[in-house]
Image 1 (cartoon, one colour):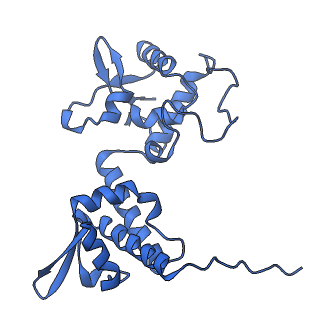
Image 2 (tube, one colour):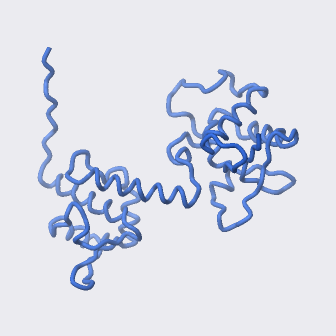
Image 3 (cartoon, rainbow, N blue to C red):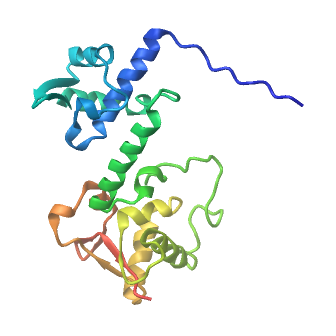
Length: 232
């Protein structure tokens, strides 16, 4: 049985121009410090695409050496962040290359800040899971206490890539247990430490501590602990 070819909706020249402008802005946002030589940008930033962004004050073009450089302004960073989900057209030429550049920058950021992918894409603390009616573990409001240490250990191994005797940030661990109340998880972590099954440490370098670390911390004797460590 023959299948009908899917016809893409026809977009106006104005819509396509807007898409190319969004693609250019995203391509620049993916560059270190939001700046790139004009000749290095793909798709090429033609005047019809570039000039409207300059008029909006989102980018600026300056002469440097024998060529031009294009830089995202503070206003452009704000505009790009507010409309990030709309900047990448589905089928524009060069979209896949721009997406790859964005993902490379995201990967470098995650490695430098020790942010797990689950922190960004996993269920967020305090929000319901994405699938309505989906459950993880027991169907009760909270998992049975006897099951939770094993689930914490499994979450720890998921964060560390299957390795023991290494640190797992609590901000990365919590999204793996979205159905567990924060108070229940905190109490179980403290019990595991008391039993010698795990250790909770703080991040010593305060410059490394992010707001997400503070929100995920467990307090012991008035001191926040940001790291879970399981030896065996």
